[in-house]
Length: 279
Image (cartoon, rainbow, N blue to C red; front, side, top):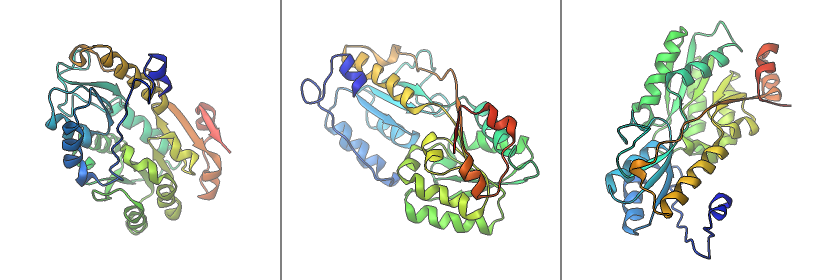
């Protein structure tokens, strides 16, 4: 809201913001999208592919600003430079290179590992990011075990996943980059903790909550850029002509305490390369 205020848009004065929570239940996205569009907002700010796709289906007229992975691969836009429709926004992905980097960093903590647990919702496993993660894993000789969290990302789903990870003998864990994970960060990090295996997360917040490591696009920076685009649209900008803003760098955060708790020795070179080490 601070970014919008700098553009002259202040909530309660000349800006009204309607918020629509789904509480992690992705089955609600189509009806939620219909409700949002039915209220005829001037612009919609959203994140994550399933809700963005539902909104795009519900309206081709109302501008949508999305914080998302790869909008071209998802079929949301024709190109990043010229979206050509009613969707623009900020990308938080760099394709297969990002997934390869995450996994190569993770494997440094356990070089002999061959079995990777990939946690995602039932929806996300069908999307391009999951295919890229699997391809990157296979290039590192990792066998991928998909741990299906269903379509409601909640405490019960993560607790069930924890048992599955241990039972399947996974040696490493990679979490999908779904923002719906964030409200359950503390519960989620216990999945890897219980199995005593190293885990890579897509968000810094999960390292702060006790997870081992994250390689990520700064979400606060992405939100600031998305707010700039919202203001641009409120000023009369056309989303069809507004390029998607792409990341120029990614950050690595490591939780040294989490490493000690699962008896993992993080190589000194990896610690030295981190942007942040949490003790």
